[in-house]
Image (cartoon, rainbow, N blue to C red; front, top):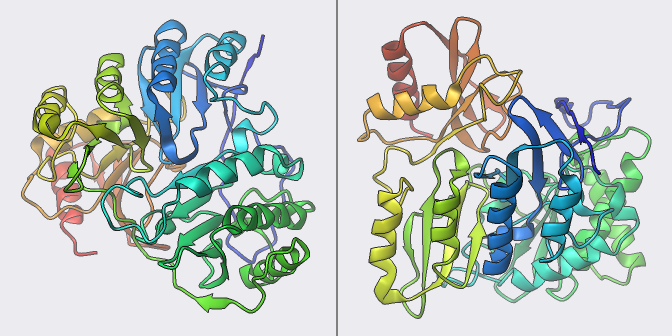
Length: 438
């Protein structure tokens, strides 16, 4: 049996500063469980967030049989199962392994890959990232060196629309209109141009180069390395040449976007079978909601914004499906007061949380002004801010006796406003901050 383990987060150092760790990465996975106040937690990696119906059914069954019956979406398009018994690891591995969700026991925690969720669905893709996704996952699972990555290292496959490029991944592939790709390391503006056929291998080489560079410091992310990202990019270029990938003379400058654009809720595309995108308040789905979504079409794509794209829906049934999901509490249009609202698990699920931030967020949604032009808002139970978004957003953090509200624009955080006690004052502060132009 696989026992649960506890973890804690260590904030990264600023890029370029010396960094070292004296402990290993304890990020939870399917085989390494995390002990929380509501039971053990398993994080099932789902590269690109892509699930077929059989895989989705098994996850629902695992949540029902082993956990609290709910499926919790993460900011990387993965699924967490909560409320698990500490000794359920063997049964969980058996269930998910049977449907291909555990292709490598030694690599399962490093399969962190986000991908443009609308790739190939709405006519806006410069490149279809699905072949890259399949190839990269296979290469990762076949690389002994890649097994040395931390569970926090992130790959992003952007089809050219600059959605997941804004998520701060460690290695990003950017689709080009000619079928090729640009390779970005961390947040560097300089990128290397490679062919589409070489793109997955280039991403693997970049990750393996990071493993070598991080060996002495124990860094988990590119931003933690004590060398400039440009130097790491040069090392990657040399490694690519050694691997037979010609990228040395293809240096370009492409600034990363400052804000990610979440897919709009509702109908996606204008012809053929429909794709539907729905938001999930707090990323939490009941078994019934999950079943309704995952059995409606061909496959589901879980997004880094805790929404779900359902493909292959009969176009004539799209309106009825959206109405059904809206009645079930999901977000099916841009006018919902839940649009852009997120929160960590808070109390009672997390011992470090100072408040029931999901309850606080729900009260604010109920009392707030839905007509305000809204920035995303994320409610955190403590200063760790687990799962917070990227780009511009309103940061609400529980503090002793109240909350701090501040506006975040990329790496710049505004002066916080502290609100003690008064729910109406808190709602007013959050509403005002969300109406600020980004």
